[in-house]
Amino acid sequence: QVTLRESGPALVKPTQTLTLTCTFSGFSLSTSAMSVSWIRQPPGKALEWLARIDWDGEKVYNTSLKTRLTISKDTSKNQVFLTMTNMDPVDTATYYCARKAALWYYFDSWGQGTLVTVSS
Amino acid sequence: SFELTQPPSVSVSPGQTASITCFGNKLGDKYASWYQQRSGQSPVVVIYQDNRRPSGIPERFSGSNSGNTATLTISGTQAMDEADYYCQVWDTSTKAFVFGTGTKVTVL
Image (cartoon, rainbow over all chains, first blue to last red; front, side, top):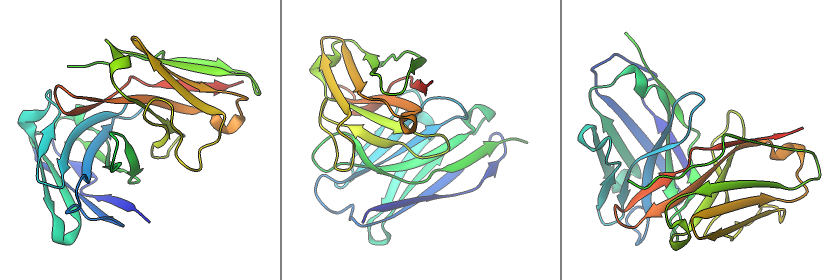
């Protein structure tokens, strides 16, 4: 059974850096074709893909946020991390991590999401 | 960057058919997936690779993709199908995932 769980601060101040952790089980990111992404959703708005990290270490970012994002992984701990710098109130959202299906480019498992509010 | 556009809302009567469209430039050249997101819950994939249903997804969900438009069809819509629906593709040029703007389906 595949599970993913996001964790991190519920509240950050403007200009601060956000660090989120995705802890997963039921698969290994050292397995070929495995990939984990971060996706966010502002309240009442659409899903927005942020970044992905693949089993071989390849990293891809949303071009509009690339300068602010860093994705990394600790394969031994089954964790994926996301840092986002210079947080702004418009970054208030529920942040999800999700696993890409092995053979196809869609997300077959999602975490429950973590709400991050940016406010002074 | 690649963009996907969906109608903001679709209304359907119970038992009728709901069609949700997703528009993107030459979308038919890519594989489309669809997610259902009920209120307060995480998204769940209902269609992938244009028209394939994951195990556990009811047969009333079907998909197609041609030209510039992908379509999710819900046949015999039930009250439990009321949710937000998002299309999604993988953009081969940027190696990035793209989500549509989302459609709220209301079962009247």
